[in-house]
Length: 220
Image 1: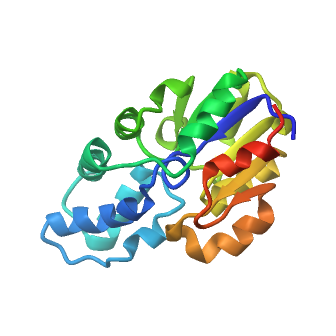
Image 2 (image 1 turned 135 degrees about the horizontal axis):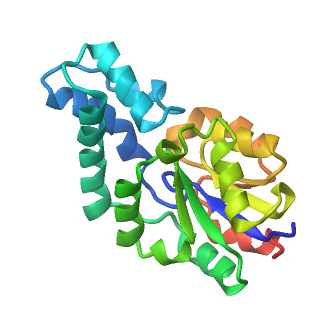
């Protein structure tokens, strides 16, 4: 697998954070004194944070603006990124492998920039990335190809030269449809999608495996 560029999702792929993200909408709605479904995040998985804000405002008839809801949810996750977030096992070794071979790397995330930057700084991996692409700034979720296309244009790579690391099935489908090399990453939050994720991905990191185990199967 000859690789010239890499796109990494952050939450659930490099950062062990999806469990916390699943609680954010619930915690935010509850903070407003409104009873919320603890599993509401399952309905928001493919959305940008702005789309998620619109959904919960409509679902719970909240008297806040989209901007206020986004900021409220961002504040909750930002606190987690600042104080508690950790890397997934082997993430540092994998990034160092790409760096040592001069492979450009970018982040492609559904999380807003001001939050994800805090998480990358806390875990010490910010310097590995040449650019951060967010669904909010691109204007499309990763169900659409726009973010991946923009990242490839920046890195001047073609789909068959670009590898994408994702824990989300919907994002991996998009990358695969573009002809990109794909790596599926196990995450407990996406447990129901693991069979399909494993079948779709060119490479797969299973439960309990280190991201560093991928290195032997990569050709740069």
